[in-house]
Length: 506
Ligand code: BG6
Image (cartoon, rainbow, N blue to C red; front, side, top):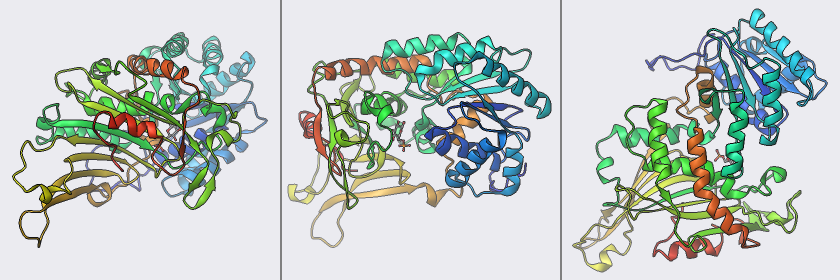
């Protein structure tokens, strides 16, 4: 397949996936429609899929291959990042199949096996199969045991089998470990790919590039210079139609356990010996092992639920009035916590994590806030508008990096100093637009490259950090209500004020 979107000046060799096919469970779900199917098309469009790539949908629907292909087509038309091209679609859709069946029914897996065998012969997928489980984890045991019993997970010679699982990977340490056991009945650790889509974002990968490709940041990346780190993932939307997923899960399990602790790990980890999977995981594991909660969890965490209000000029309902949420739900839609990283580099530096729905605006950022200069040779009124230096990784939506520092105000008598910012914007420096996280991650699964997927140790360590917080909150009853469109409950302001600090206003 030609590669129309490649910039001819880009001399890096693209890695194209070898012969393979993907079997998708959960084809009718939101994620499949909005992210997975469009990403597969985008990869095909960029020339990263093998010509004989096959996509097999499996679900309890009376669909023929063409019906499923029509679903994929609609999803691609609506959500793909790259332009629609008939020739690319024709090649991709020629490999689309559908197997109708109940997830519990062994017979259905026998039909799936025979379809996959046929594709191996007809499209040259050569026995290389990814099982993408975009389904609730409660269904993993039955799917995995049926895949195993039907022989779908058996490979010979150079063939490979891989499984992709979506979050939530458990709801605490014990359930995450139980899921691991289920998966390990049919797959070895290097065949299991746990998706944390934040790690597929270019701006997140750039944290390591900026830290370790440059000489000027690492010397100050430690407790001698850093006052605190604030990691924020804020959304202006509510839970939308996801009540059944979200109720009982909440903001901490949904976002802190995975995305925010991964961002913390990338910000705080030591330089890996190389960017091989083993080395990156080794450093992330070390730093996550060093994360410590304060002894008084209640004082240094905050939780809240969004109340009815206004957002973007339209009235919005509160969390407890959302369809499918019981009026007594204690699920939090805002969560914040303070942790420290107990090692020499980060001794005494608080890392503040916060996430929430229906906040002021959609923004994800990692802000490294530096200590004040030890001495300021200016009159106190001259530096009234000077705050702390900061380096901010703007993960989204306005991707880039901001450095904040003090500068002389021109045309004023004397030395008046005020904050200014220096901005790096992706769009200004690079010709290519960034791929969607799912494009990168799905390609890595097909290539068998796991550095961007949290391993089971990281997942377990993250639950170990979060479990005591969740236990503490379980006894606290109803979370505090916060106004939609604001920046969270007052307890979030109080927790950081106790440390003599304030949240950044993104
Ligand atoms: C998902 C959460 O993992 O991340 C969602 O389940 C959240 O609740 C989403 O909305 C945010 O992702 P992004 O990429 O839009 O920041």
